[in-house]
Image (cartoon, rainbow, N blue to C red; front, side, top):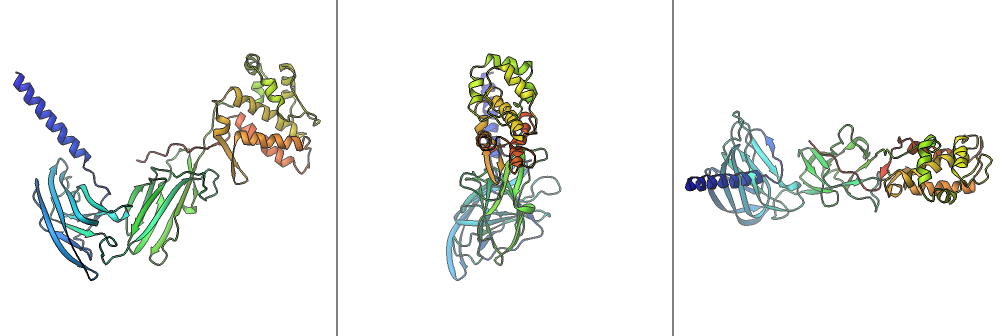
Length: 413
């Protein structure tokens, strides 16, 4: 009985190890299916036939590329998986592409030139899916060695994509705007694939001569993210004729609405009254600001009754008065209704500059000190109304706010 249990446990353990090993086998790049029997590149070798499943082979080569002779070895190991034949490889010199031919569906092309670092090995490569639904058995494998690393005849141009958090929505990468890791970037044309940004929002492509279009994966419908740059969401170019001279910038910003706002009506009814009766220092807090009455004189609340009356009488004949009332409600919301730090963590763009809610309150406060009266046709009335609308929208939980720190990037299907 114990022997049976021990034997069963051993089998299960071996199966678990095999499963983990299988799941972990994933190629560094997604393959591109190429019809027919693709020709070998100028600087490479072909292994025909490949080793049988469960076997390895090491091929020594000496090849001439652009007048230079290179020697090295490539080791290929083929094995069976539930999905069909796979293989791993190791090379003594960098590999640019691998072409895995098998079955009637053509070949899989693995292009490593899009990666930022030279590739000497990879695992989990395979031929295309055959009619049975499994990967076809391998008929031959071609290795194209990376030009520039070993003197191959083909040359490559590095194109860099920079994905960044465009907090001020101006389409330019500012020093305080971070890169966005984990954003999907698509390339089409003579290279087709999707790649994730990393290392501060960068992804690098080493592209051979040809035509390409690079775009970002747009945020899913209903996402808080929106693109700010470039117009049309794509860069199209031809290498070498119109190769990009600088980084290809993709800017995005996220906008959210909060639910901690409360209106002038709230702060003048029994709900707001109950909060302020329990709060210490709300009168002293408001008196530090340049709030004004309808006639432009300073308003400093002495008790809740006076404050309530001041809020209920607020109107836009003197826009600075209505601005004062809405700003007072925002100040109380940030102090008593919103999570700590909200005033610094969220803001909007004004005149191409991101400003936090606290920054806007300070700007509006300076405005009220300079312009306590903004009647109709006053040249400063529109400025007062702008501040008033921002506070009004925030108090009604309809203001689109931009967090200083980026939101989580979308989850791509």
